[in-house]
Structure formats: C-alpha cells, structure tokens
Length: 250
Image (cartoon, rainbow, N blue to C red; front, top):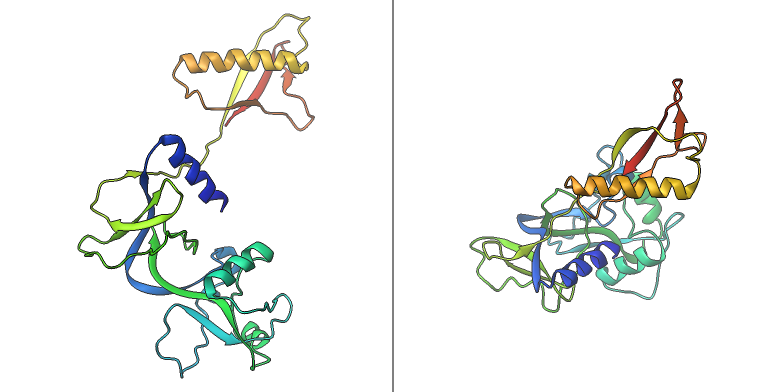
C-alpha cells in the first residue's frame, strides 16, 4: 500500500481528478501467483500446477487440501480470496505459492481441509510486464458492461480508488521514474586554515555548489550530498597540496 499512498498524494498535489496508470485488460486470462517476486522461484517453479481434474471451470482462485506445515500457516476463520490475501500480506508474507511436488505434498498432507493458496487468474496486465497482483478497485469495479472496442485501461481517481475505462479516452497519466544517482568528482583549492572536515564548512560548500548547478539548469528538487570515503572522510589531499572530494547527486 505504500506505493498506492504515494500515488494518491501525487493525484492530490496535482489537483487532477483522475489519471491513467499502467494496468490494462489483456486478451485472455492467465494464472499467476499472488507472491510475484521472481527471485522466489527457480526455473519453471512459477509454472507448477497440480489441478484436480474434476474441476473443469476454474474461475478466479484455487483451493487445495492443506495442513500448512512450516513455513506455511493455516488461518481460520474462513475468508474470501481477496481478504485472505490481504490478511497474509499484513500478518505473514503472502498466500502460499506451491513451487514443486514436494511443497504440494506438504500443503496437501491432511486432505480434509480446504484453503486458499496464492494462485489466481485474471486478464489484467501491467504495461511494464511486472506480475504484481495488487488491485485497488472502487465499488462496482472493474466494470465490463461498457463496449470494449478499444480495450479497457485503468485510471486512479482522486480518492485513490481504481476505475476502468476504454483506452482511447483522454486522461492525465502518471509515469514511474526511478531515482537516479549521479556521482561527480570535484577539486577544491582552499586556504590552509579552512577545516574541510568541519560539517558546517562542508554544508556551506554544498550549498554554494548546489546554487551554481541550479543556475545552470539543474532541477531544484535534486538532492546533493557528500560521498564519504572508506576512512569516513569526504576530502583527500593530493600530493601537490590540493584537496579533492566526491559527492553524490540524488
């Protein structure tokens, strides 16, 4: 929910009523695990399935006989799949993923208890190719009643809740940007009495450098910090008596 809260603040600060996000309804539903971290799965483990052949019309989620041996936890009373997912993420890690036959046997050992696991199916796809199962639909959403001539895409409202609309409609939109770090190396020449290890002196230099960079067009929300060396110092004296330093621009 942390990302959802940041998204909500972005909408509020911009004063926009709604904006597109990167979720779109794909051509066909597909099965995926609630725990989407690919590092959790070795080769082909995310594709492991052990269907009960008596079930031919799988709709949304999967149930299985289970006793949840460690690291699994059997939770009661019963909940619907979405509430179960929310509970597991708040109290534990996520709904259980079954990666191989050994885990399937561990989970299904009791055979007389049915419980949700983390496998679900829908046709919604993130534009960056990620497999996050997070959804934050508003009441009555997603709404498939409208014509789907141009595909369904998702907007986030000023309330933070999601609605789906046809993708050819015009909306504001939200881009995702990774914070970039740029390292710059500078050389300073100062009077001998100036203590470059003094935090106040370092802060004063940093302020001057930041102002000069802004004057040259650096965005005002960029953050400048000094980069400390392994010995804990920012500056190192050169052989000719000058000093050099590094700083990180975040």
